[in-house]
Amino acid sequence: MMVDDIADYLATAMTRTVGTNITQDIMPETPDDCIALTAAGGESPDLVASIESPTLQVIIRAPTRATAKANANTVYTTLHGASELTLNSRRYLFIKANHAPECLGRDKNNRISYVINFKVIKARE
Image 1 (cartoon, rainbow, N blue to C red):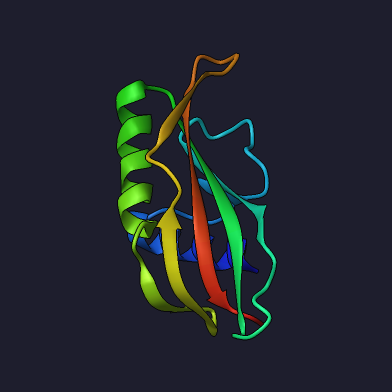
Image 2 (image 1 turned 135 degrees about the horizontal axis):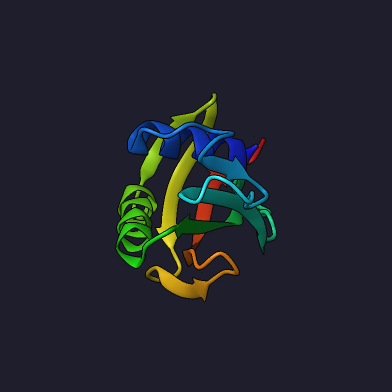
């Protein structure tokens, strides 16, 4: 659900479409310019407060370095520091990037990708 919520949030912020150029859990072969979000583990839920801290991985791909880097920077600035969000009726207290966008290199079709991992603090469901 976190992946769906944040995909919707990014789609609105970046004027994209979930299922077309923002995907959940996989990076499709097309389109060339695409963003994929995947839940990537995280910390165990807090035993006292009703919060959990999953990790979100975002991979940004585009045909050119300039476009991929610009898109990665937009994802970074949109999510890093976002706080007190209610997305699809779920409360997100804080989203923090674990690092700046990192280049993953080019794929077999010469498209370039960047990755950013985020720590998400959200109300336990």
